[in-house]
Figure 1: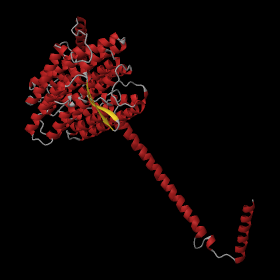
Figure 2 (figure 1 turned 120 degrees about the horizontal axis):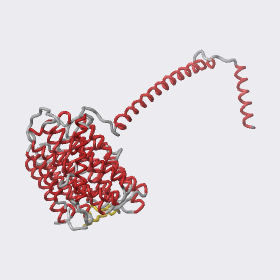
Figure 3 (figure 1 turned 90 degrees about the vertical axis):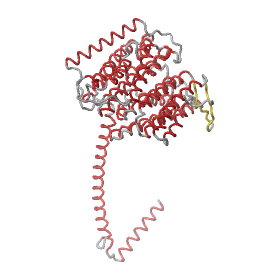
Figure 4 (figure 1 turned 135 degrees about the vertical axis):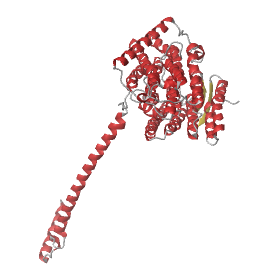
Length: 562
């Protein structure tokens, strides 16, 4: 078999899915990630394909350990998402999901910045239809904002790539760094998709408005492509250490007060990406391995939590914590699977989050960043509050909402079951994942001190939650809108624009009135002098005319000689 770029199979399947009836389409969708994964594993190590286009050397396929790991991850994520969405009859969602997964694969196997740009924009164009598919006014507005911000990211990436090409004569996608305007523009482009602080609201705005199945795909690809891009282009950039530490901390406060449980998970996603960004910023072998392993695990356990909340939304039509509760009685399997995802994201020992997050924490201490380590420790306790406890507690246990339903469709349970099995397998036997990492792993996750420290953290965090809840201090679940940075462009900027426009309208009205008055005055003066009864319209004596002609001739002669 020729060396086939992994995205090709997904793009071809998307074309076929656009015309196939539902049953063959479902079989095709299930087969694509399986066949694609097998093809990926057959690609030669360190494969690099080059083509020349308009005197530019492009590398549409580069296979190394970093890209291959993300390729395997995206095939797993695509398979789980496809299984979860099999019950959906809408053809458009299936086509968009296949194009989206294929674009993510195209991006991580791109060896040059121009190819990366093409798939970078395809990620935005294909994924937005998973938001529009919800067919609500909120989804349409959020999708348009999402698309604008993602396209801006692509424009910055292209601008930076062109600057680097002019400087170096190469479009190769390797280590870039922050030297020069081109590197800074690309860094910001990656930061937008990675949901850096102040650039993050597209995620918390758009993801909760997608369909129950679309959110699972969204949680798997866009931000993880950005994490891959940072690992490829900006490993060891110290600024990322502090950016990542900020990312781990600030979403906690929003997630604790948020009522929409899918939006809680969106903030939690930023929190988890922060650990990855810190590891990439450190740039050591241990830190990079920890960041990449955590990205791998996050797709699975965050996908499991998104699926469990998607199942709740699908079966009840509700997703606010204040409207749910008591669902463990009618959805016990979903409840159990959600708890496994919550244990994984909280880094319980023997669950997947523990074997990757602890690598980043250890690397931070080894590199001499005690303040950053304390921030990550606080963030670890916080994620247990808002994702490990809040999500299952308010959805399934907090109070009896009176909702009686059934378990979701079998395909939804199967997808959640696959993700849960992977969470436990990786958590108990992490060496399979460690063997895929780009650097040799010399790390023992089940060290006694690691386990003891993590159990203490979780116990104290749980005790704090219980005390806050019993004492009535814990923020209640309310139907409300929480202000975030998006207030600047969704409220402040439009209001300022309307007021500015109103001021300009008033100024234009005053200017028009003044011009009308000036025009009327000018016409009166013209009529006064040139009208039928005006000064210049009267009959003048011949002598007077001769006198004025003589005056004008004299004036002309004086001007001529002077």
